[in-house]
Image 1 (cartoon, rainbow, N blue to C red):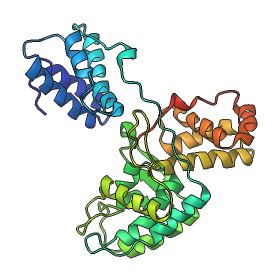
Image 2: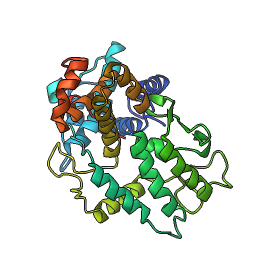
Image 3: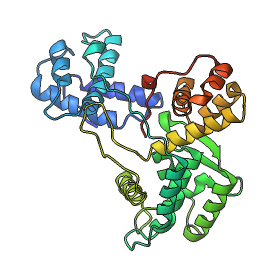
Length: 331
């Protein structure tokens, strides 16, 4: 990608450094390209990342959602820190000037809600434009929940990533380019074996495990979200859509299946009196979290939803249940 402003070379080097460290940095690359054009058009003579440029970029656009503003400002703020480390004149926005977005409180599906959702996926009918849809939908959403996968992790599975003999799924190029292997429950494995017989008898190892269109293209995120909305509607589960109130998100969402898996897993371990000090790292590895604090966030959700187990959690781990705003994960 070509950068045309006075900061172009440093932007290119910064993105290269991020990607070398394992960050995909794709959407951020697009934002920095927009920032490069912004600087070229509005500040063609400037060679320093000064206060005026940064404040102009960080100013809210008409009807811009705070989350969108935050997403637009954050990569440029990181770039300013990078140029400052190079000892170049750089203005770094003070923390209080950055948009503060209240954390999204996930929807934890009840057992009855999960049952209704999966019943609706089972009713998915044949579609000529997407000939495998009626096979894919029941298995795809069950896999998301039963393994706590991110949407992109399940969507981008290849046939070769799923070992039905050992019951192991290999997740490649997840967050920070990490790989991991996760076991599948015996019940889910049986479902996947039937699915394989219906869909993949003549497939190649590099084909998508969950094919989308007629030619076996990868499923699109917007298509999955559209189908999920329909399942929620038919299951009579209210979906408010994206909130128009700044800092609040509508729901429930597909990603909340992952949150529900994590909460239910922790709740079961607590009730079974498992040693959480030993089991929490297992959950961390299974979910593909980089830091322990990411996984510990679910202790709060579990305790909040099931107050009767708070004492057991605190007895096992001490008073480490984080506040609700300490962590947020997107797909």
